[in-house]
Image (tube, rainbow, N blue to C red; front, side, top):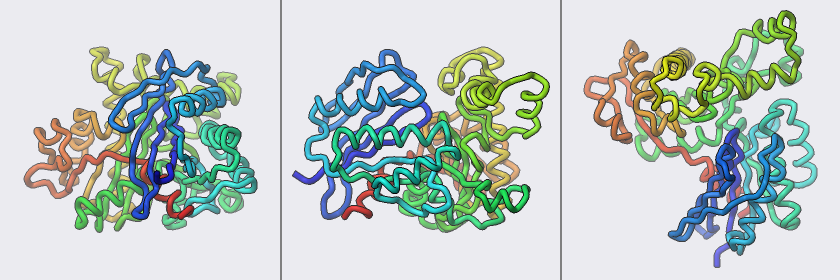
Length: 390
């Protein structure tokens, strides 16, 4: 039996896992799993070897995810999924300035990643908890880290700079960008599916519970909507997106909110949930007749279109637009709303192709190619882990 690679991708509302056999030709997918942290009761949905299994997890969903990680790994052990396990690859949100690619995790690397937690306090611990949980279960297991920030290391220093004192920039207060594993996959996939488009100026819209956009030139990151933190850019499921810095100051000085209250507001009670007052899930809002639900989706489309136009400015034009991630891949109405606002750039949508979620959804006369491409962060993690371990 070929050795098994497990990939773990801890997001803001779910944990995705991938199972890959490691052969001479690289990783081959053999299974996928997903744990929805908002589902009650908590259940790990697993597909492998042509069968589906729902593995119940008896664990509370806490901020640290410690109990969830232990229960998930225990369930995989009991189901025999981890037989032949050779290595594990993790998505880690922040790699700081020092990581331009994946790393093998040892004590020193784990300590260095821990030290980056202040840069992503609500995301970095999730991945590192999974690293530690797997270390307890399989102490000798090789583990690797792939970073959401690494893909954006190709950006010009000007694009990474805030208009703050230089000493702060030099100390690391700068734009990092996130969702890099998704963008890396889309860059490769677009090059395979439409090489001429991939060679040009492309905006990729990664629209899910967490959302951002990235401007690519010949497959390299040039600029992106997220900056220092995962709060920046467009509104998200529960996160506010770009915000006047005066708002948190006002909330502290005039409304008496504490640091923790502001953090909770901006990360967990804003975005689609905050505007609608109904849900953070775009599917729920799309099915609702409530005016606030329609307003939340309209605001999301407005900001996504505005960010796409800003990135086109950085790129010096736009040749292709790619929608990906949960909302980008499945919400045709959202894609139509974004493209309508980009009509002045020459975007013309084929309504039928868009409704079918076709690969190519631009219509006749469109000056910009428009694609819908499913992302696969787990594949990127697996490829990077294999490159390190082979």
